[in-house]
Image (cartoon, rainbow over all chains, first blue to last red; front, side, top):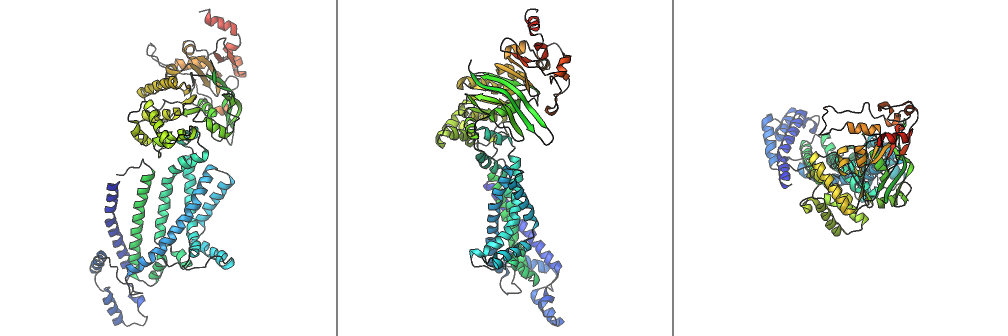
Length: 305
Length: 334
């Protein structure tokens, strides 16, 4: 296990290096941001001077070399908008995003696992029909629509929850439901299908032949077996959330990474974009390693190599 | 001999969208205390469904539609699910054909063994562990405490089947149902497992209901044999008369299609044709399309299971029509 973990950790630097190259190249291709940063009536001399100050007049390899050297020092440069460290700004926003991601995951899991299990245990019944409809709807409804509808119902009409922003636990409820719904739809479907398959396995019959209650058979014997695919998908979904959910954070004015990234894109604030992508990539790599470890723990047949 | 279990006119049908499949169609037999009763037959003859029906483990769309399963004065088809659970794994337990897929892959052997003991015998975890390791030793597994901590995939096929047997016998059941326990194992391991089952049957005074298609296994372990064909019992006999003097044409066919070492013939004689699909059985005797002795009546009417004077029974017009004459021909005329 420790050897496996060590090997996996060794893989991180090369992956991150490739990610940084890709970020740099993509941003380079997108063109320099000087034109949008200066007023429309700026003179060519002013533009040239500004380009020189930011280093955009240098050849590609020099720019790239500087970028890598800065990166090794953990320096993504200063935000063009705020004039402070880009990485610092990103890290400042990260907790809010993680908080929202965690809350949505919790909501998704709390809904999906019981619903998936029940609909697998009682297939083709009313509750199964409800669960299946929920998964289809949950997947089909776009986040922006659901978010706005939730605001309309719970904030505007019923006035029980705040419209947007942060500050209390109540603030996180609506954005977390918005994000959690689609996730739980996906997970419900997966729990249902994997449980349905497992409930027909021979070892379920063995467990029943021992005289166990059906509920004990389902929870102790079937559910544990269904966890591997479920954990994989759940963590993949979580990985998608840590980059910040652009739309949901915008709708609810949630001060997370997603909002920061969108503003940075509008302003062509390259250092922030680079730092945000770098941080997100690191988080996703970390979650992937965690997933691998999780299912090796859950299924003893998967060996640490 | 005291009866352990009595199955009376058991009918288990499967309800699909299109048709009703009578997998088990009026099966009756008894299992005596301390004896091994074998049910033999080809795939699809309903022998496994019969055993699941006894345990009430038939999954939907299957359903027991008629008949009784009398165990200790109680009809198992009528008692509540809760009562049935207290019998499963405790008074009647079961081992299955495929020992790998029959053990939960993500649960340690020890935990799977303890489960039954904690449930039925109300042992503490510590006592259950002690008893489980004792059982693992009893079924001939070396280093039982290590196996206790293992996962099923870490054991070989024979070891897994030994674990299944240990699990099934943990609560000293009165009846052990073994559904093709040796089919998935290679021949040397088969012999070991059969020997183990015989030994444990005597130690624990457990009756065994053995489901198999292997006549070699039957000869090895059974006292009484029930031959099933197409959802019905076609012959019931003690193991010696079955091999020495098979009555039903199907049983004769089965024996002829088994290789013998001392036989001079090079070719086996398979039974011609296939087992009819349970949804679409022929009229009359369901064996008549394959039967070499077929008569007019066989095509029209189904024969009854007739007693042949001794404890043996057969379902065939050959024996029903002129029983006395045939009996004479068989026993004196030779």
